[in-house]
Image (tube, rainbow, N blue to C red; front, side):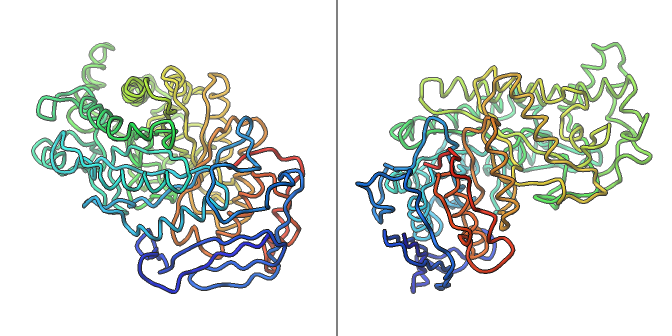
Length: 531
């Protein structure tokens, strides 16, 4: 089989230059044939890879079918839908503009065709609250998203939708304009840290049940958005749209915004700060302390809590035998965590109720806050809302089970050996702890990578996390764009997909003569699916 990734000679239409960081001006398309010849793969220009030889395992294809086809088809001869992991790829964060146009539609269309020919199950699409309900409460505009979903359907791909009730500074995506206007006069709808600095990319959990939006609560507003989405996309439900992820906090994850924006996709030295200082949160804390019989404990957050960048286990709340181990520390951290659990239950219950009459599967995303994991106090996790007890994720997982929701776990590409020693980090141990909890409670899992891998080691780590009874139903590789389609990452991703599809590769499948070339020689009986 010959596989080529061809770049268009036209710079217009297939432009990836604005789809994230440093995207190249190119139109991408796979061309395959059944001849067992050498392959070419290129990005922006054709790059010859004389060693990229692909051999199709005889057991995977019937004699009546060609090794690959240039036509888009919903039938895949190597599918194993009963036992396999379904592989999705995230579309660009800004796929639809706030003017309801599809950004780089030809480039996205070419990318969809490439993914279909590669054999992935589908794609994931972020749908932003700040785009679809931008101007006024209850005034929804779905046209751009509807057009894009129609494109995905015609490409023969499935779709997971992520309903994003947060903003993203990196992509210049904000909360709805009308929400920000209310926030100007009522800033306590946003989280605040000890210095009073507001986090304005999502709403504080403290207003979940407060009528701060012209007499409506946050949950009322979210439900209106969800119901409008369900009605507008009803013709795609269950056929094209098979899964919906409900946004639960900063970056869509269930957590407090304890870390600042400069640490997105990176690890800072500090553990972050508690986000309990908006007036509504403080009112909740005050009431809780009075009910607890210690009213003075509700006057503020911990006086000795570290700042964002301060070393968290030296002379602070989280040091050995520090305040976190006192009765006060237990009181505060239990309350702080309970607010997070309560928010999870409210938003997942709302979503489960709204989509109960549809065939789609609902999910929510947990963070993987792995810095300082090897310390007793777990400061980074605690600041994000996960109480430092033996079963600190248990209550959250029970909420997912109660609402029949899948749990999305990111960071399946991370290895302990890649983490800075000074941060006492362990993404592998944390991931396993959460998975242990999901096994005890019967919660299904979806996986994600944290970063575009670009190395065989990261792809191998993803593969290890998908096999061996880890309960992963769906894996979403984040995210489509120039880095994803780069000559470094895309051959590795293609080999990764082929492993999941039971294709047998020669030892030179990765091409070139680099050190990674012999990594993706698969076992002959690996039974996982990509489509």
